[in-house]
Length: 226
Image (cartoon, rainbow, N blue to C red; front, side, top):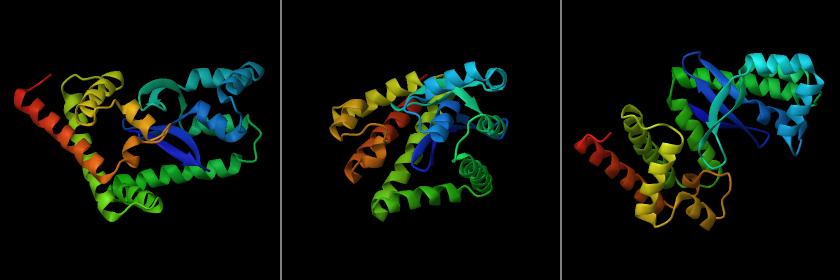
């Protein structure tokens, strides 16, 4: 499960490893949170050169994991589990170290709750949208649309479509068929950058998106498309 968590309004790209039952977090994003650096990638490079011990530790223990980019695509980036992140925190003097440790614990606890009761995840999403002034009707449409999307991507995954670029290509084709715009053009029209386009759609746009994705899945199932 790919996700973007927020720590004090800063994004931390995250991935839940179902096999290991562990969260992995983008190391660069963690560095950005702790240092407020305008170039956390450069900060991390210098840290690894300056502190050979942490450099070796990161190189040995932190794998390259696919995470969501700002464009919604999947790209491999250096990630660490909670243990790895705590070790990194030790090497970066920061007033945010303790709050970030508490945040890590909270993220882990919430995930365990959601696994025991998936409805909690839905409720958190609902609370997020409500805090942004969305109506109950919009929220219901957004959640129904996400379910439709999940069923489509499940079909793709089961029929040899690769996550990442191939998902993005197919999504773009579907989106352009109903809207006349690519996903990027639609985001540009709404003056969005890193935000999720669907979170900024009108009710009508959500309905058209869901209808397009439902139709795509039904046609694919009928034709047994691969």
